Image (cartoon, rainbow, N blue to C red):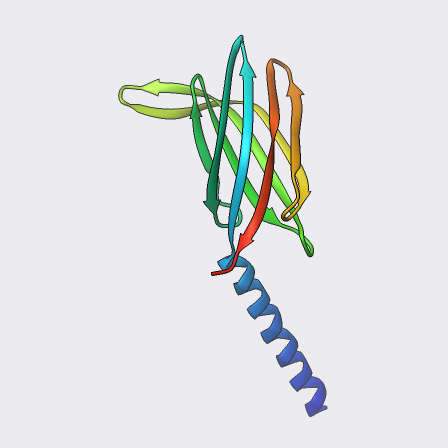
Length: 134
């Protein structure tokens, strides 16, 4: 009986360590994204670093684009891309209504094509996500 209880303790500790390691991960994404809405076409090519679930935002007037990465099983990840209409409130830019939301699934270190269209919003491009060793 003691061995079984000890095994549960080790399993619980391993689960906590794995969860803590994933929460400490930092993703680096190399991307090119093009967003077309209402005759406006904006393209950005850059790199960003983020933690799991934290949104990285781009001001692509007249829109705000947010991308967040979440690790799935093994080397798989999920990328959530959201496009909102930007609203100017005095000197501060605020999020407006959501125009586009799409979830993509990829494999770390491999290119992922971003190609989707919803209503009047078209998203095109590619992204490659890796985990930094820190």
